[in-house]
Length: 136
Image (cartoon, rainbow, N blue to C red; front, side, top):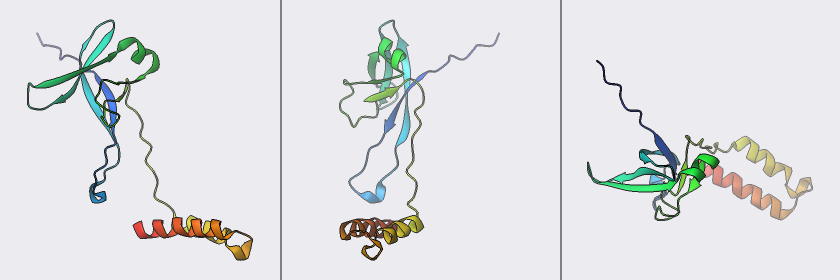
């Protein structure tokens, strides 16, 4: 007789931590938190495992999470913790697209003072263009 593997369930959070050094900046990523137990009132999950077997367990209100699909967990330790905002299903992360230098150059030309734009608008458009060009 073959044993049926136990289904593992997860809650999901977003790790958007930013290092002080911009060279090591990573885009936000989805983090899985394994559910360990469900009761009628709470869902318990593994916040982190420091070493094998040393689990830090967190919990959230089950009714609210299942009704809304997401919950803010004020017991997580702080807004920066990946489990501060938990989701029942995998959240979709929106990735910022790279700025199009052609679009920025056209926008800069459109607000040029010789074409009826203001000095302030041109300076702001040129600053956006220069920042994008420096990072490209």
